[in-house]
Image (cartoon, rainbow, N blue to C red; front, side, top):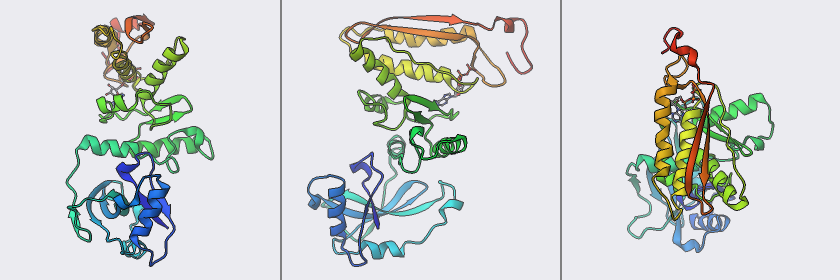
Length: 319
Ligand SMILES: Nc1ncnc2c1ncn2[C@@H]1O[C@H](COP(=O)(O)OP(=O)(O)OP(=O)(O)O)[C@@H](O)[C@H]1O
């Protein structure tokens, strides 16, 4: 079996497996892969042998049409992958690439280091559903151990979000991931839940479009222990909702007003605790009101259960 990775040609497909013999030519494998990936005209494509380290392709070589990928594959050194961490793991792969006239086949060339945001996007989009389960409902054996192992494996690969049907689990990374920029806002617009890898924007998008199509109120409940990321998640949801509503004809600065209210409330109602440097010491219910055309016309924030007792006494190391 020869695994052919489509990379940027088919973002949501990890690889296709092609049955081949030792003397099968590269162009035959290209033909089979192109047909499995439902791409047009196999003559536009060729195979590239790539060498990657720590998840980045560092060099690659275009194969001549009459080379034998199976023989090449047998020469690749075997790596004891399980004892190395991701950052040091090296791999050889076959990628399907568009032919480039000025690219000489047969020679290795160094790949220029990609923009970190774009390279993160490609790792983000490659979440193979057969290994890591982006939706826990698809786990073949669902119990507490498999569920936690899957969440941990996804987290180690940098995937902090996981679905359980229409519920989203977010594991707080306590570090910034470049997955909230306008590229992601755009990518998640008008997509079915589950069509793309799990993301908080997908929830906001589903709620917004369900509101418009079903003409009923939508509700998102965010829950978790202190420091788990509820406030950040709320802000991300509001951010996406405000981006969506700005497509309305009568968009105003209201969206900015709603987003801007957060820090003011936090200034009064947040405090440092041992669990979280910026812990919300109150609960809140945010209601965003829309016009029929999908633009925002106002919002109401209701606060409840403010922890007033900390005004007169706080635990050690708290404020
Ligand atoms: N998606 C995220 N990406 C990166 N960092 C995050 C993310 N979510 C949360 N964090 C980090 O975790 C910290 C705690 O998150 P947050 O204040 O949202 O928790 P919380 O659940 O609202 O806590 P509390 O219940 O105490 O108010 C944030 O200050 C931020 O540093």
